[in-house]
Length: 426
Image 1 (cartoon, rainbow, N blue to C red):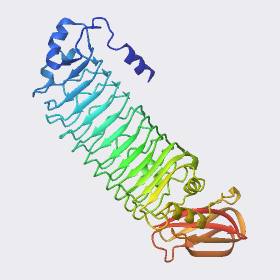
Image 2 (image 1 turned 180 degrees about the vertical axis):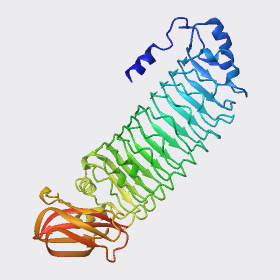
Image 3 (image 1 turned 90 degrees about the vertical axis):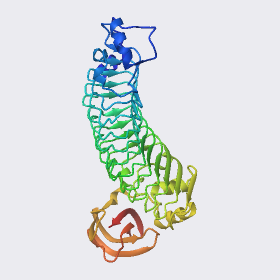
């Protein structure tokens, strides 16, 4: 990365290039005169605009001399069938913006030698782009990646050499994307992650190695997305968590690794989400605001941190129009009392596995216990099954007649509360 930063400082100041008096942008037609005036200059000192009229970039005299652009490379409604002809470009100091091309550009072939983009990579409103193939050597993007309103984009490739994105990752209205394969090398996003109205998105595959987001994580109107499991490596979010209007979202346990957080939590209009399990490792004092609204099936909100946040009045909350047990702040507080929020004595930490389970699971403690009781509660706080006068450190729990759903298991010894676990029957 150091070599790329040095490159960005020194590029376009080579001998033989203009240092002043040049226009704010060049059209491709201007390049013939440019190379006549500056035959030894390989760097365009400002922006290059791709042509509005139909044509082939290989026809433009002078373009082959240019290997770097100090400003932006922009296609603003350009009339091209491809980007072939830009093969000599290795460096662009500003943005690369492909915005509503009128020609049938299907991929980014032509940018194959490009290693450095100092600004953002913006791909907007393409009608024929199916793949980002052509970014084979790209190693640095200085700001954002925005893929927005690309009706036929199905294949994101060419970003394998990038592990840290300084700015935002914004994926909006890419209607045929099934997953986010192509971002596997990303471990950190300095800005926000916004995933909005990608109506075919069924998985966040591709974000499997993401560890840090500097701003908000915003997932909105992804109607086929059921789980967030691919975010299981994410441990730090510097902004807000916003999950809005995801009609099929049933499980957010993929967020369970988030421990560093500073922001607001909005869980809104997720029709079949039943539990907040997944937010449990966020400290209550890291939450600045809590909104739980219009989630018709949301019944379990009484995570320990949520209980602490509400009981200690650590910040404002807006809780309403959910299901029983999570329909108001007072309901959640009552549920917290019913379940108990005592700290688990680490001497008695226990586990239940597999979890989720279908027919049976094993309860196991770290040490041998005598005269223990195990009670199972449904998401409304009602006790539905008990095991009493047990000894040892293992117990087989059979499903019996338990419906699918979330359950709370509480462990006691001699009436002393030792700890709690959440289990899922499916």
